[in-house]
Length: 146
View 1: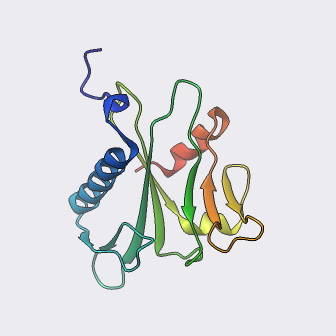
View 2: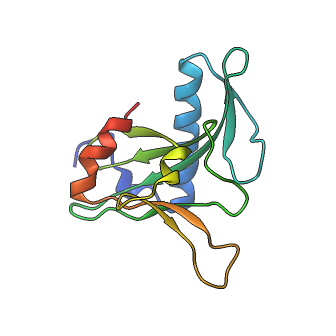
């Protein structure tokens, strides 16, 4: 392969996650946002632009295979859907530049087949918001592209 986008060659999920967080941070900075430390440990960082425009950001990166998408989840034990809590999904496919999708956490107020809300019996810590991507759902995700 002769491509600068060889995401499958990035060693591990930790490295991939760090790359995605840096990419998203730079993207917000290019659009005039100030990026700062997160307001809670569940978030990756906080962005601010002007007065009253402050958002907490959670970033997840995925490397889908040809026909499978990994399940994406965010622990929600210490938060609830809010207008100022945003999820950014970074989709990394070999031979393609990164695709970024910005999702307001309020989508999980009405879970469906794509945006799931799971409660595992007997556990307070395993409450999660999920994104169940399939070929059928990928077109819907495009509506959140940034």
